[in-house]
Length: 440
Image 1 (cartoon, rainbow, N blue to C red):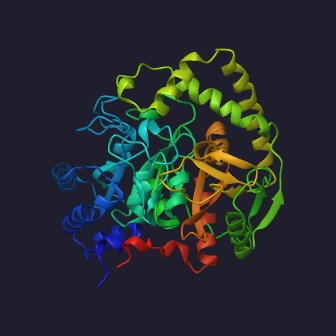
Image 2: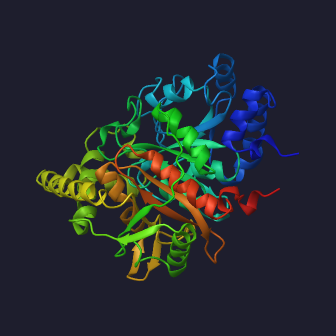
Image 3: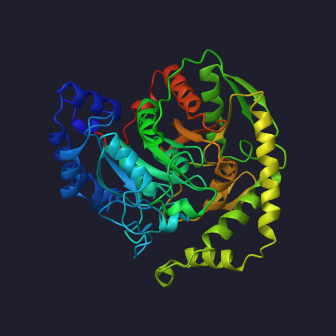
């Protein structure tokens, strides 16, 4: 008989609602599964056994009633302040906006998801709790900064998790760990109690095993219905240079095969000022993260200290220059979306690298992991549009490859419709993946 943790999120919710699955038993099995498997991947370093049972006892019968989830260490909970994988509390404990949405849907928070320190990295290698490991190969990165969320879902510890995304932090680990990860539109839910509240780039994200699960979780987080539509055709815009051309050849092959499998109409597009988008993103990112005083600065890694200091030293004139670029890119993107439904390119230029390295070899030459990943992801954060990563194949290394889709503002639904269309076109092969390290 299938273990309850191997049911999808939608299956768990439906089974609890029908009475086929007892919510208390599911919670117990979830805590046992985390205790059994997580020492290998380090995805969920803080567990709330008593608090989660209290949540279940008072949970409303919402769409996620009784479903156990984890939540990234950037969100306040009534009983715990967020630490963002550092040694200190960064915000007061409170019922954050994200927590309230999940609680009202009946979800149960069983633990804190590990992450890259301060959310300032795409590998998940740096954390006060220790590095997060990829369930597909424990010597490789789980991604960042929401690596613990992606790894927990991939290893079937929980069926869903809440991450965040300031520069690909939901989509990148989703691609690395072979799960679905969606960043929602900037500002689309309350940001109180969220460590990303001080930035104009960050948005919450959901991680799940398939598009249906991601839809259910996103609906709870956004507090609105994302009605599923069957897409007969989909117009897909592609910017090939550098987002496709400067990727690992096997990643490019998987990307092209995914588009062929769906039969979507592909259109090569141009976004004005795109060559300046990276600089605009970085000018805003470092200026925003360098603003507030940081109570744990002395305990941070050298890399995190360097980013914070860079922000405090950046000339003020860089910000308005970057904002002019940002406005131009947004305007161009709005025009592009009049002729295409979504934009597509690989989520990351390579599969997950080993935890022991910070460099990648791209067709254009060596690049740091963070810069290469952020290049692929930053457009969604700079402009505030929603984005999703879906698993589309395996690299010869045996590691997952992700396809990224971007959609117009507040149209998360079309991303999930497209993801479902791909899953149906490929007989849901990738939506049923289990990381071999944890296959029963």
